[in-house]
Length: 172
View 1: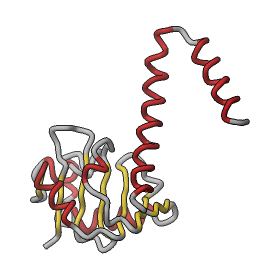
View 2: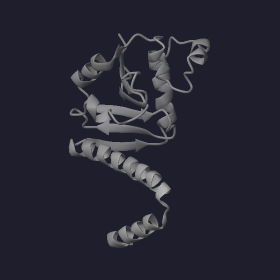
View 3: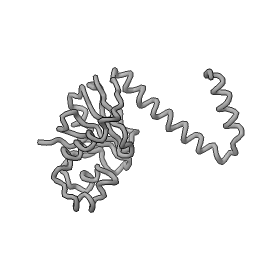
View 4: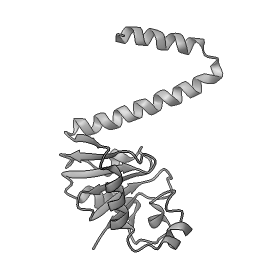
């Protein structure tokens, strides 16, 4: 199908929907548009994005071992770690920088190669190469995203809750 055919079919589908469904359509299109702009911004900065599927679980486990290694299973359960890993920061179980201090610390880093994972996407981890121009503001509309270096020495987390985070934690 060509672009004009897609547009015609999309318009026909929208025209056939009752008005009360248009909000759902708008929300879906807005989400797709926001994801497109997010990726386009990174690509415009020269970032090379790779999707890692086979290595995803191993990288996520390494994140756990690096940044939550001093957390007992009891503490993890009490703070609902399995729901959101970033609870180690919001529940003050891991000392970290927050808000603008976290953003500034992330922006000050040299970040040629990064891993990026999302709390609710356990099947894929992204590898960003040539990521030196990436800044905290690039992730402002992302939810429950974990950005960290390939040596697992620091992590930057942007949550879905405006009153929680962002967080920056560096292993000393």
